[in-house]
Length: 131
Image (cartoon, rainbow, N blue to C red):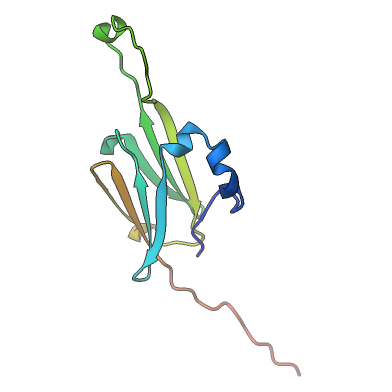
């Protein structure tokens, strides 16, 4: 099982120059420990109900959506600067063949922690005897 972002490895060279705001809002660390893969992702400003995780066809996809709910009081404000962004954010990672029932996720203080157990690799090899 490989834990590879959907983007190609060399894309990381250009990330600082070409990354979108949506990628910047879902930065993560990926590491291996005790036979499991771990993804720790920053999703500040989101509630647990705003985040969804889906495992399908070998991909683990994390989505977060933040809406800007304006009210009458907000319409009266004359903003000088607005840096907080709203919208849909998504990151996908290729995991290969995985046991979807054993994936665990925890969200605390703007940090999403996902644990993906490594699947036991069975050698799919057969030696053929020549007659």
